[in-house]
Image 1 (cartoon, each protein chain N blue to C red):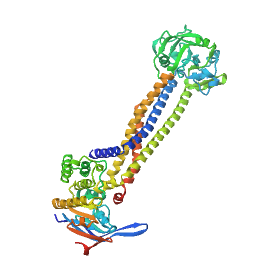
Image 2 (cartoon, rainbow over the protein chains, first blue to last red):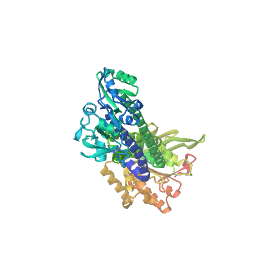
Image 3 (cartoon, one colour):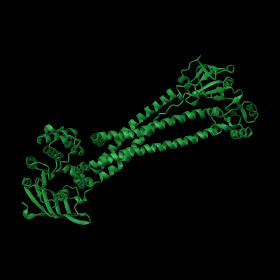
Image 4 (cartoon, rainbow over the protein chains, first blue to last red):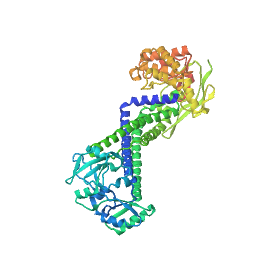
Length: 391
Length: 229
C-alpha cells in the first residue's frame, strides 16, 4: 500500500512535469481505443440485429427468385426479379412442404427525399405471416393487416418513428394511398424498417399482380429440409430455395469474418498505443538518467525504479483507456443517432456492453505494461556511476 | 563513536577503455573512523571520485576489499547495499542532483519516505533540517527557483535526512562561487562538529580541503602519504 501510493505519486509528478507530452500521448492512445470501441460496438450492434432478423424467422426454407440466389433476402429479391404465385400450388404438393407464405416485396425509392437512408421495404403479406413467420413482431398500437384489407399498412417501429407515422395517416405508393392501421413494437431486427401491407394491394400498386419475390416455407420434417430445398430449386429453375439453417450458417461465416476483423482492429489499436507510449517513455527515461542514477545512489532499489516507470506508462494508458471508452461510447451513440435521425436506420443500435468496455480497458492495460517494460528494464539496469556522470 | 566505519584494503579499480586497461585505483588503504572529516585532493583523473564511489558502495573494486563496519561489501547483496546507502550514507554532488519536480521539502522527505519513516516524524525532521540550514522560507520552492547555494544546502539536508554515519561529497563546491563555497565549506565543518557525522570530501580546491581534519592527496590512483596531513 505504502509503495503503491509512492509509485503513483512519483508517476503523477513525472507525468505532470512533461504535461504537454503526456496529454498528447493520452490523446493519441485514447483515439486508438475510442476508434476500437466504436467499431466494436457498431459491428456487435449490426451482428445482433442481423441475428435477430435471421435467427428468429419462423420459416424452415425461403424461396427467392433465381436471380437472388446469392443473397436470398427480401430486399434484394425486390430488386432483381419475381416469380408467379401459381408455383406455390405446385410446390405445396411436395410431401415435405407444410405451408407456404406468399410475400411480395418492393422498395419505394423516394419515400423520404430528405432522409435518403429511410428506405423501408414494402412487405406485401397475408395475415398469417405475423403469427406463423414473424411471431416476434408485436403491436404497439392499432392492428395487424386483415385479409379483407387492400390498401392498409402496419408499420415497423423504426420506420414509423423516423417518418413520424401515426394511426390514420396515409402513405402513397405508385399512386395508391395506403392507410396506417397499426404500428409495431421494436424488435431490434431489420423488420423494424418494414411496412407491411396486404399482398394484393401491393402487387396491384406495383403492377405485378400474381408475382412473388420471397416465400417463407414451413416443412413437416425439418431433417429433410435440405433435400426439399434442393428439390424445389431443381424442379422450378426460376426460383432458388434455401434452408433457414444454411442462411444462419452463412451468417455465422460472416460473423467469423467480422470477429477476425475486430481482433485485427484491436491489435492495430494496441500496437498504435504501444508505439505512442513507448516513444514517450523512452524519451522521458532518457531525460532522467542522471536523476535515476541519483535515486539509485540514495538507496532506492532497482525494482522500485522499474515499477515507477511501469506505473507511469500504465497511468498514461489507463487514463487514455477510460477516455477512449467514453469517447467511443459517445461516438457510437452519435453514429446511431445520425443513422436513425438522418438515414432512418433505426433497427441498428450500437451495442455498448461491458464486454466492449472491458476490451478497451484491457487494451489499455496491455499497452501500458508492454510499452513500459523496455524503458523500465533499460533504465533500471543502468550502472549508477555512469548514470551519475550522464549529462 | 570512533569505530571504523569504512576501511579499504589494497583496493584497486581498473576500467577498460577502447581495449586498453586503465588503473583508476592502485592499492589504496584507507580507514575512516566515525566522526572523522577527511578531504581527498588530487588532479583530475587521479582516482578521487572512483575511490569515493567504492566507499559509497556505488560500485565494487576490481581487487582488494572494502569493509563497511567490518563487513566485506563484496559479499553483500544489492538489496543490502541499497539499504546501507539509504540508511547509513548521505551523498552530495557537484551538480546538486535534486529532483526537479519536487519542492525543496519533498526532496528532503523523499529518502525518509523510501526508508519508511512515519509521515509525522519525517515532516518534522525535514522542516528542522531545512530550518537549520537557513531554508525555512524556501521549503515550497522547486530547484529551478533556488540559487546554487540554496540548492546545495537542500541537497545537504537530503543527505542528512536518514541520519547517516557518513557523508560523501564529490566536489560539492565545484559549481559555486567563492562566497557560497566558503559558506558550504563552513557548513560541512559545522555538521561534522555538531552532529559528529563522518565526512569524506573530494575536491581539488585546497581551501575547501583545509576544512577537514585530515587531508589525503591522491596521485595516479594511489594515496600519496608523504603529502597527506
